[in-house]
Structure formats: structure tokens, C-alpha cells
Image (cartoon, rainbow, N blue to C red):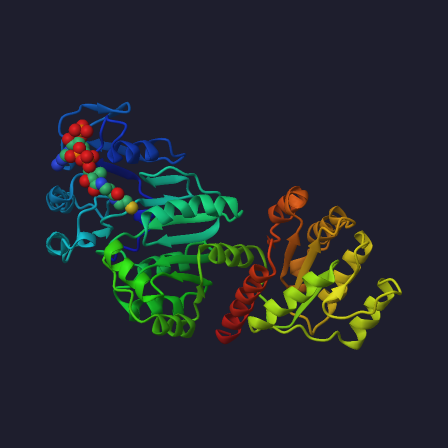
Length: 459
Ligand code: COA
């Protein structure tokens, strides 16, 4: 039977080889993270000389453990790892995470080849070496040695860089993006990005997949996994410049490859390439919380004309259209707006707009079949009533089942700094992504549009 990574992410028993009483050691942190996880499993520290670590009975070697072991974390110096892998094989361990560094990332390819030879023809799957491990937020299992508790949610994150993976946990938390799993793939001796995309494509806890990659080992398999995946796949590919490509080689030993080819291939496979991590989280937030845009026609509502223009430019630059209002919508909005202004798209509802104007104009655009997505923009003009704007959107979400009824995404651009903070928090908590910049909003709407196109293509 093939190993489909089920026991990798949901093991019933875990051993940590290289567990230590010394709290400064990685093997101690890894053991502790699993121990304090709100996750039920049998846990076995393995250490040559200890009888007990963190209150758990300790074994000298894997072979001494009287139980079947689903997952082994290895935290001993690289040179000792092949021997541990042999012991894993003897014990029929199906999944191993090699935390240890000192392999191909520093040119020590022989050691990795030795491990590959040992596991050949077995169904053992290996993550790493040179990895932080993973955090399975959906099941509250922390099989990593690093700090950080991700907010639970629907984004599966795959990172080739451990440190960046850790940074991503905090960034995700700040950006109100919930995570299902976050995993560091390290040197990708075995478990590769494509294996994980395949796994996450059927993971019920995952709605969106995000990757930070420096290079891929099997381009065809990678692109194919994106192509067959029925969920949005967001890719940050580092090493765009020639200096960046040089840096990836010394970081994880990856060859960055031609950047243009990567871009074209990711696009052709149906993935979305993001410029950086903030963009990945911006898009992930939109894709996880909003329906896709089934076309590129966007309606903008704003209480500040300038912000409306900035949004129009940013949308048009990203291939979105800000069409003129249809006669029917024009009439509806004309009845709502004060006489001093005529309806347009962007719909400028003027600085003194309150609850009614916000709500009625948003509804008019939602009802227009020629509008595929809506951006609500609010600028703190010193006179604005953003609390009423927030209330209008929240009311529509909570009472009118906004997404089920109209099936259109709503994103927000709010420019008001600290004064807007608690309102933005309320909206984000309700799943409405709010961005502080017109560009970020337009890019996220573009992500929703690409997702709509992908869905249409796949029928
Ligand atoms: N079986 C059981 N226990 C063993 C063992 C074996 N074969 N070999 C060593 N041990 C024990 C050691 O005695 C030690 O326990 P102790 O503290 O009680 O003495 C423990 O395992 C760890 O071994 P040690 O030799 O002390 O290694 P270390 O903890 O200093 O370093 C690594 C090990 C893996 C952390 C280190 O080599 C490394 O690679 N660090 C970088 C990891 C990293 O950054 N990864 C990528 C993240 S993105």
C-alpha cells in the first residue's frame, strides 16, 4: 500500500531521536512541542543515556520501543542520521522528519544519497533533511522544534525555508490568516512540494495552498500537481534576479532556474504567482473568506474620490475592468446619492455618507449582473462615518447571507490608520479582507478573478 501521508500528519505514535534534557537543544524543543500539543498520541523520547525526559520514559534506541511508531523526528548530527534511518527501516517506520542540517545545502550530497539507498523500495517517507518539521494546526499537533502557534484556518503553507516558515506563522497571525498546516520541506530528499499539494488538495481542512519555493526538483510533477489540484495554489518563487538566484543556491542548494519559464509554467498550470509573502497572505485571505470573482468587472464604492481613482488605476493595471454603470444600476444609485453628485463607477458616495448610502449602494452593485466583484473603500476624511460603513457591511453579511445570495466577493480598502483599527478588526473577523492600500486590494481581487477563471476552465 502506498504511503499517502495520512499517518505523517496524524500519527498515533511519535518518537524523537536525539531528545534531550538540555532545554537549549533542538531535540528538547521538538519533544516539548509535541508533548504540549493538544493532540493524543504515544510519545517516545530516544536518547542514549537518559531514562526519562520531560516526565516521559526514554528509550536508548528505536528498536527498544514496544509500540509501532508512525512518525520519527530525528535531531542528531548529520553524520549519525543514516544509522537512525536504518533503525527506522528495521522498525517499519513509515514517516521520518530529519531536522538535522549538514546535507546537500552545504554540498554534502553523499550523505543524502546514502539515505536514499537505505530507504529505496520501502514505503518510508522522509521530510527534510534541514527542516523545521510541521505544525498541523487543524489537529493541534506541533511536530516542529520552533515556537509559534498559528491561528487555525484554511491555508496550507509549504515553505522551503525554515526561518521564513516560522516568520510566516507570525505574519499569518498578524494578517488574520488562519492556517491548516505549515510545513518546512527543507532539502526535499523525498517529500516534495508536489506530494504536499496532492495531499492538501484532498485535505478537508485546507481551502487554499501557499508555497514559498526556491527551486523545484521535478518541474513536471510540480506543475502537474498544481494543474490537477481543485483548490487555489499561490506560489512565491524566490530567486527572480540573477543575484537572488545565486543566493538560493547557497541557501538550500536549489537551482533557481529561468524565472520567466517558472512564471509561464505556474500560470499555465493554473497557479497564481505572488510577488512576496504579504501578497500571498493578502490573496489567501481573500480566497479563503470570499467567493471567487466570476468575471473581471469590478464595482468600487468610496467616500473619497481620490481613493476611488487609485483603486481604478490599480485594478486596470492588473487586468480588471471598472465598467460604466448599467442604466438600471445608475438609476438605483441616483436615487440614493445627494443631488450634488452623479453616479459613476467608482461610486463616490461623498464624505458625509452614513449607513444608508453605504448599504444601499453596495446592494445596488451586488444586484447588478454586470458587476463581478466589489471593493468598498473608506478613507478617514476627518468627517467620515466609518463605523456606519462597517455596520452596513456586517449587517449584509450576517443577515442577508451576502455570499450565498449574490455569490460575489467584497474586499475593502481602508485608509485611516489607527482610527480605523477596531473596525478593520471587526470586518476581518467576519471574513471581509481589508487592506490599507489600493494596490494590495486590486491584486487580491485579481487573485479572486484568476480563481474564478480556473473554476470556469475546469467546468
Ligand atoms: N541515539 C540516541 N540519542 C542520540 C544519538 C543516537 N544515535 N546520538 C546522539 N544522541 C543524543 C545526544 O547524546 C544528545 O543528547 P544529550 O543532550 O542528552 O547529550 C542528543 O541526542 C542530541 O545530540 P547532539 O550530538 O547533542 O546534537 P545537537 O543537539 O547539538 O545537534 C542537531 C543536533 C540536529 C540539532 C544539529 O546537528 C543541527 O543540524 N542543527 C541545525 C538544525 C536546523 O537548523 N535544521 C533546519 C531548520 S530549518
